[in-house]
Length: 446
Image (cartoon, rainbow, N blue to C red):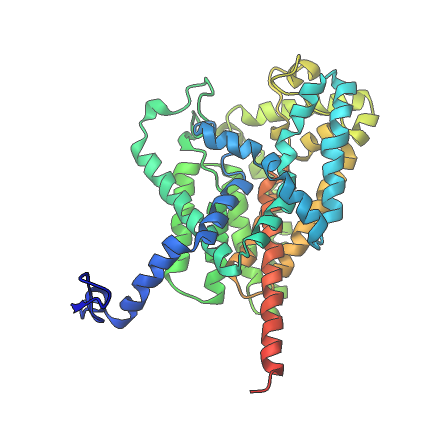
């Protein structure tokens, strides 16, 4: 210890505590760096918190009511950011996004009033599920304001991905069976049915991004622990999550992501072989999917969904113009439910994939959403050209959303794909800035 020149307070001499021989030199540098990251890098925490809300992780989790309510209101609270992004940022997807928002939030409620007899309040309330389309604007604005670089965004994705699986495992071990849903819809997180048993419907936006990042990272920098960690994620999904469509879609995207990560001379032949294999196996897959064993394993869910699709098609056929413009939707606060209107005991548009989208928004809405997700694929594909596993995972996630959309509609949680678009825009901006800096360094005489 040496005396402080300003008075009687003693301070450690160089080499004390963190400089002790108990820590190696790299540890002496690591401790202050971690402290700065945890305490002083407020931008990283702000980005992580914002992405959690933009990604709609609590969109349907009524179990955590305050965060659930904040997630619902978040697109409206961040509307000023969306306006700023429209005016100040050169977003390549801005035009198609604004047209889509105009149709789904501006026109469709009016159609619902005419076709379904909605009140004005009920018609406006039906647009809540697509308010998160604004996230493609507001998330980009906030990330730009916070000057979120690739490192900060990647850290946020990996952090929340690890938290997703760790928390899901902890809940699986700690929560007793009597806390699971018994049919009163008091929870959307802890579910039970006869076919799958007890399961946790964990928000998987960041969990899936983590899995796609592990896959892409392995092909960029091979390490044994990466496929083992990916396998562990799949095991946890199969044991606890148990969402068939989500797990199957994730597995397919992991395989495709691996093929896209191959050297160019191998990529084309491998992808062609995969397509040929799918075409050859398609009849057998179709026969298996319609076999008695699979039908029994699905319980009554498949029959219910087929009945809902038949009712939806019959309702649209009654007035053919509904196929073009849609019929709008109804909510629980309306005077009647969609089940009452179409004559079905249970009727949920979220069960019907693109048929549900066509029912609500018509062929015009379907076309706009397809164009919007094509724009999402394009911008995330541009971001994926960098040798960054998280940037490539953004493309994989948008591809996953499109892949499962025949069963799980793109309007179920549109904020996920929109957040991927905004992050991809910022990844591209960061890449361009790094490229420009490298060029300036080359041009500057030493």
